[in-house]
Structure formats: structure tokens, C-alpha cells
Image 1: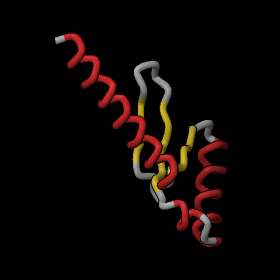
Image 2 (image 1 turned 30 degrees about the horizontal axis):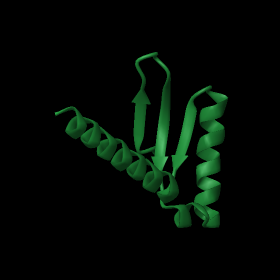
Image 3 (image 1 turned 90 degrees about the horizontal axis):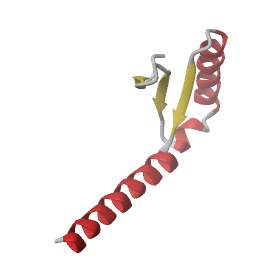
Length: 78
């Protein structure tokens, strides 16, 4: 299996990101596969991040809050 994304940050850190629905992550066969991937990447000192719906929903909420705050700041300055 190949992770969904490879991210390289400005500071040169990098990581593989796998996105799977939280319910799917809990299936024994999927859980085992994801753990094997994590273990292999860890032996190579490569960071592996597993993201589910909980993290995605929080990220979207945070983006929405930041956008709303930016709009309010803009309105109040005009």
C-alpha cells in the first residue's frame, strides 16, 4: 500500500500521510496493514501520520473559525 501524500515542509522535515475513515482504520485487516506500513517507515526513520475523519473535521472547523475571524477583523477595520 502507498500512503496518500508525501509532505515536505519548509524546514526540510517530511512525512507520509495516510487518510482513512476512522471506522475503516479499526477493521482488523486494515489495522494490521497500517501498522506494518508504520513499522517499516519507522525503521527507515520516515514519519508516518494516519488521519481519520475526527482530525479532518477538526481541521475544517479550525479553518472555518480562522476564516470567520479574519472576515470580522477585516469588517471592523473598514
